[in-house]
Image 1 (spheres, helix red, strand yellow):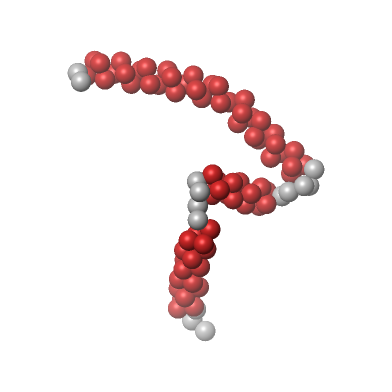
Image 2 (cartoon, rainbow, N blue to C red):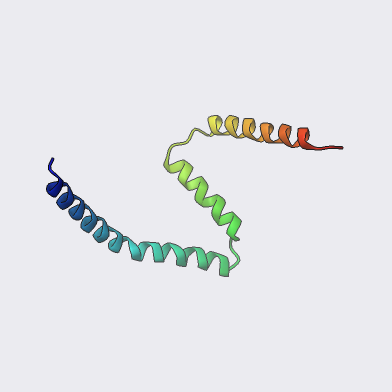
Length: 89
């Protein structure tokens, strides 16, 4: 593909991306308002909202919780071991 054609395709891509981003803006604002509403009403705090969002993302990506728990435990154990080895007492 020649350079001029690539530049044209890049410009088309950017224009399409910008149009999509513009369409998504109200939804992002709505998501911010949802978060703000739950915090202002003291239904959830920021940490709980963050955890709920992470849980949703994991569900959305079909993360296997058993596998995740094993990996998390391994990571946690390695950090605990590392902290213990750095402890001069």
